[in-house]
Image 1 (cartoon, rainbow over the protein chains, first blue to last red):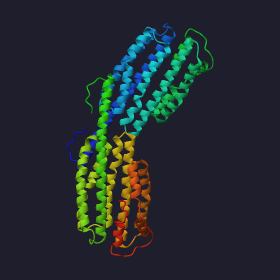
Image 2: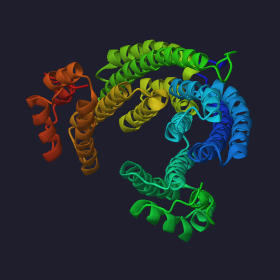
Image 3: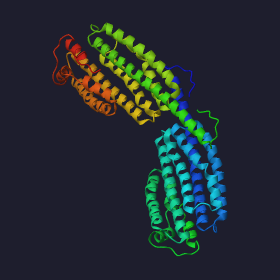
Amino acid sequence: MNNTTGHAHDATAWLQLARRLQKQQLQQLSQLGELASQLSALVHMLQCERGASNIYLCSGGLLYTAECRAGGALVDERLALFYASLERARAVAGSALCWRIARAVDELAQLPALRAQIGRRQIAAEAATEQFSRVIRHLLNIAPQLNDSIDDPPVAGRMVALYSFMQGKELVGQERALGALGFTRGEFSDSLRQQLVDRIDGQQPCFDSFQALGSPATVQLFRTQCHAGLDIEQLRRIACTRQPAADGGETALRWFWPANPTA
Amino acid sequence: MNNTTGHAHDATAWLQLARRLQKQQLQQLSQLGELASQLSALVHMLQCERGASNIYLCSGGLLYTAECRAGGALVDERLALFYASLERARAVAGSALCWRIARAVDELAQLPALRAQIGRRQIAAEAATEQFSRVIRHLLNIAPQLNDSIDDPPVAGRMVALYSFMQGKELVGQERALGALGFTRGEFSDSLRQQLVDRIDGQQPCFDSFQALGSPATVQLFRTQCHAGLDIEQLRRIACTRQPAADGGETALRWFWPANPTA
């Protein structure tokens, strides 16, 4: 609300108000931009924790015990920053954004219970991965709504680029989790294989949109650093066409930490 | 700004904020809707004053002396309501809307000087019409910006319908003013004729867009009441194809007040 005391027929007062609102809008923009960064960092950490928990559960608790604990701690660190950023964005959020934040915050509240189940291995790897993915999905749903209050087309375009990248990266993350599941088990069911293929196919449109709207420097970085390497393509072929060798999780780790990781 | 004291990780607080913002948005919507109505009524009165002043000046001060004065008084009445509505909308206006309001308010401030010139017949009819049209143009420029803060697609669509209708109606008004000029003078120059044809051609796209987005009842009213009648089409043909008879302004008045006026 603008408590301006100028009169309605005073053109100068309207111009001053316009300038003040424009300045306010830039501040809002910077707060929403910061929230977008925090969101993206939190999702990244959740993707890591999801992957570590997946390997831990698939290996029957033999692998990645420490990584699970570390992953959880890193998520909690990011979570505190994310909540602080949400608190600052509260004053500039529109109603649709608030609905999505409420939904995501509600999902985030389930994390401690999920971790307790994972620690006691009282949940199947697929179910745990599904729960992490649901939290991430609701966090990602916040991103497009950040554009609601942005009427600067170049900035709005960069926000869409970020959102597209986050979506593509999440599909990469899901592909990794599904692959880890199959390689650790030494078996890819038809359904698992289909899910894997869907995740691989879905990535391209997201990264196309990112490359169309992202800043030249970021797009350049993506082109040189983030393409699936030879290692990944070989493992993708194995996962999608034949049953891998039972090797006590060795291929799973190679799948999870190839020479050129994307996410 | 929302001074909510709830915490960032409290989903219920976010839901409550979302509902409060939604309610605020409905109030804003109603204020912007009221401003749109006042804007449309003010433009209508300015169109009437423009027409009356035009006939007054073209007839060398013989016709429409009283109508000019009455037209000015009706505009001033509407102007007071418009300013009051602007004052109420100040708290919900965005920066782009404020810029346009400033521009229009600045133009409105020139009205008294214009009327003084018209009263003393110190300005040519075409120049006076042009000045009224500029004021109206800047008022109409406010309308599309009202949609900035509206994220309800049906309401936004109705706003576009209103704006399209106002644009079409202004072209009708300009056509009337140009026709009155020619008929009162008993002569249509090539340039005047071209301007007339442009105004007639421009109306259709505006009214098409209005009919596509307006409420069924309003569109129905438009279809039954607002089409150019036989009278107007005959006079349009005369204006666009041959020189009218010199009849001391009789045809000008028939042009201005046909059986079925559109604006």
